[in-house]
Length: 60
Image 1 (spheres, rainbow, N blue to C red):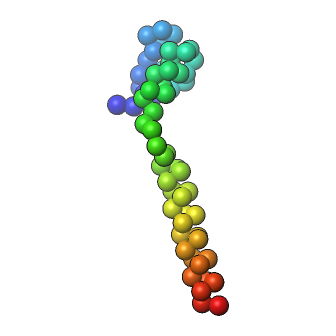
Image 2: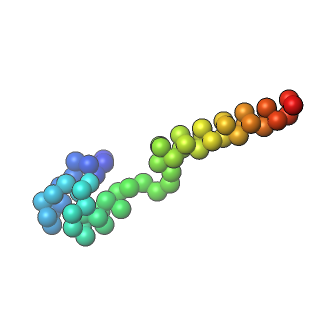
Image 3: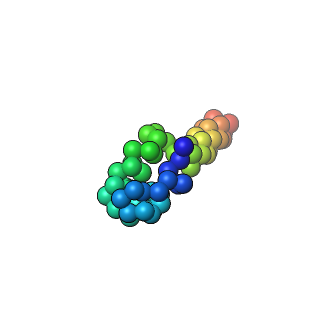
């Protein structure tokens, strides 16, 4: 379950907005640790660019 559909019992706002300390604490608790999909995509692009650069340098 994601927190974007949860409603805070403390302030009656969506937890994703993080309006009160309870919302922010629950949002942090529900956010999975590790890399986000955007970060993984960025790392993959950087890795491919580094491989392409190394291949270009080796052929020269």
